[in-house]
Image 1 (cartoon, rainbow, N blue to C red):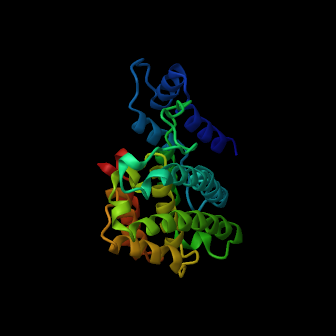
Image 2 (cartoon, rainbow, N blue to C red):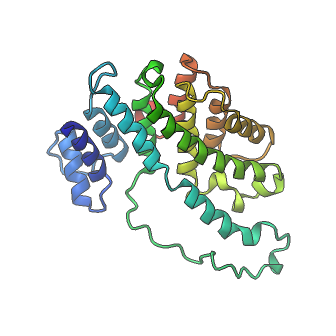
Image 3 (spheres, helix red, strand yellow):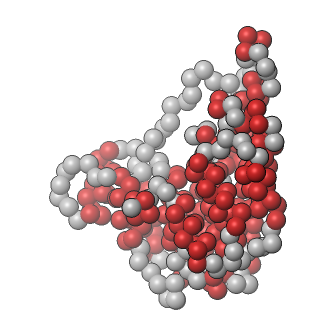
Length: 265
């Protein structure tokens, strides 16, 4: 509907590369004439709250699907980024002596490409969508084939990333090497953390709750003793223990959305 489209447009405008567009959108949302820059994260949350809805309303199913589709879209480049990063690092990860490495890989870059828009907030968008998704009761997704298909797609991407991290975690020398630690890599972190939390939400809703592949992989990584980014480690712990409809599990999922001011406070 029109309200939903306005909501999505506002979120896009808040991430626009033009500073004037971001400021104007922020002032419109905060209903302020002040020309000073708005606090980005708070402005994002205001935009998120603009789309007020009731999970019991007639349009709730439409909004539920929209949120899940958006999460799939936000995480869609996870596998591509993982492949690129692992190929780039493969030329150095197995070489014990630095002086023996000529680093002739064509995948390696001395200078990264400039980010065309550094104002895009992938992790914020994912975490805001998750918070809204958790407003729905568990019963909302029962026997919905389309929703299950979407979450299975997310599980698949999550399992791929977990498998790679698990492979590295079994060799402590690899994952404990910060230069090659994927859990700290900024190109992977937003996708990996997002996939972990979205997958946890799916299990909390009871969608393929017996999917032991991602749960077992999470357990192996946690028990390996390897160095893991603390936020990733927390998300793995929540994934490992989540139960369908559990109130405490829901609170832990929300707490994992660490970047949002309303959660952090």
